[in-house]
Length: 364
Image (cartoon, rainbow, N blue to C red):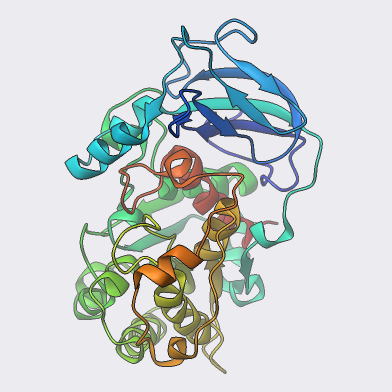
């Protein structure tokens, strides 16, 4: 039987979008609404736990021209007001409060996805792992990063239906499904950590394990803590160099998703320099790695735009109110559609993007 937690087709190739997440939000006009990523023929709308199916024209309305789902006043479909979202964010609990408010839409796509959602490169730099997989050999995969790499707020880790496992587990299962190889997944990631912690603990947590692939995913906390971009890049390069010096493993570097765009130090003019530094580290001559840009994926899903500022070069930009006002979300997705904790973690659907983007680098 196919693994229910494995997306064998990447989102951009699949004819059907399965379980796309939405949080139907009343923005003040008493009409909770949310949009699909693309136009399509709606197949089903369920709660995020996939236990209850809602009926069109009874529980909700669907406009296929605007891709919009709206709720009547009597609807039992999960929903939220702006005040609810503020309360949930303030609680900052690492549970499933946002997950419980979200719903899942499955539909047949009528449009192609934005090409910017295909945000990975460097598959040619992963010859060691691909070679072992093609021969059907067992491989060891290490995921090394912060709480996002650890799997917060996947429903499986948070103990909520449908219990979808963290994206790293989905990655390992997809490799097994694609190649038939046994994949041992090791995940020493720790919540709240930065690239400095990653460099300091590399030997004990990574290289001593003799992996075949290391997925390095630091950045959310580095940017939040205003680590100098030059120091961030130096730490990442030291991690890559340490892996290469002590193992035969291939390396994939993953740029982090965005935090809540309305939060402090969240704006793109602050976040982009860290992404760019990671990209430069991934393309060093003689040390090139695989590369996945989840910042680009998240930015594209949100339709988030911000002016390019001269201060980006040295990361001296700040998130002033004027800067925040300039970065409008044009959708079709909203941050609350995709968040696991309202602050800086993906939900099940955005977590699936992580798994698919990384595993597509290793497609047969």
